[in-house]
Image 1 (cartoon, rainbow, N blue to C red):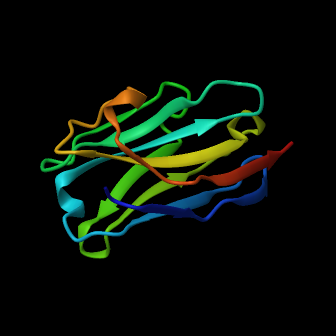
Image 2 (spheres, rainbow, N blue to C red):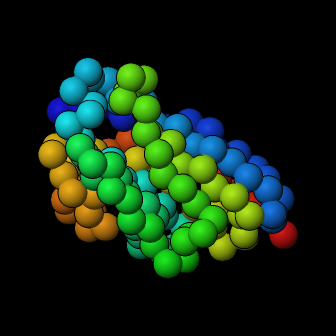
Length: 124
């Protein structure tokens, strides 16, 4: 099972940008669909963005569409989440997840490996 480590979180102001990174432990990273999810205090974890293996097709949650972008660098075993125009409601712990030969699903149960999360806090 691939190990995932997120980084890049922090405390920012509304309107600022952050880029989250998630590094995978193994070299077959390109065969994984990768997803980003988040969990705000007192709320259920929710889908943010995902990218399929192979053709790299992406999908985004409506709440982040036009502001967040998922990308990957297979040579570095890394998936990124570029977050622009951050809002206080984006405050959450952000998790990356991996799905072997996946299609980039928005469903959490599709993903078998999860990172520990990185905190993003957006002040108003």
